[in-house]
Length: 331
Image 1 (cartoon, rainbow, N blue to C red):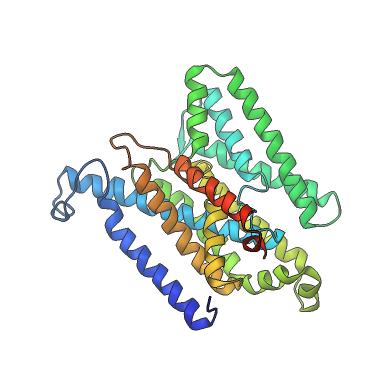
Image 2 (image 1 turned 135 degrees about the horizontal axis):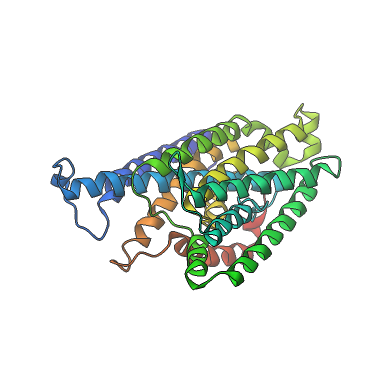
């Protein structure tokens, strides 16, 4: 595979074009047939197109971009291509918060956020603080300690979710399971606007430290010798990715495998340079999740499949494919 700068810029340009085409054509896919003439007609089709279809496509693209670039960052920090945005227990904390909200029967909205989303974001924030606190107890921010702390926090949150499900009635248990599947059933642009500041801030930080990630990928000793403050860079990446993941999971639930598949596919094509891999992961992750969501709402219409089910169905074989080809796992 040719890895020169011109080829990489061409591929990023191709992803931009593919994203634009997806924005144009994906909103027309769905149960209700909408023709181009309905878009600006002001009828029911126009309302569905702008307030449901377009909003959903944009939300899917933003969520996929955030999950993809978060996965890319964790794969660089841990030097493991199987790392995901949920490695450090952020999704488990968010799931615990949402499950608790459903169990308690809390139904309220604040600034466009539902009670479930607010509790999910609070759970994600608590998980972030707990993982950071446990890591700091070891007097450092080593990747191994952070990874083990994330696994422990995630397992603890999962055990409490199981207890809540056991104590819930049938309706609450079904709502919890449905939320854990992940979904993009949005109406209007409030969910998109709620996610936007978290994703923009986190993505800006990750793209800014792309050179540092390149050096850390080679080795922390080499990065230190080149003047990189490894601890500060790792902390900045951890906070940026956690904020993005928390914002996405609070709105969409835990949508798995996007953060593992999308950046790894980009890495196979573009190589390890995060100056190109970062923008490519943002674009391809958004494109990938948008196409998965389009498939989820059309494949057995009029019934919609949770998009998390689609990504899991694709992610399982992809994971096996990675394991079967050892040369694909090397960073």
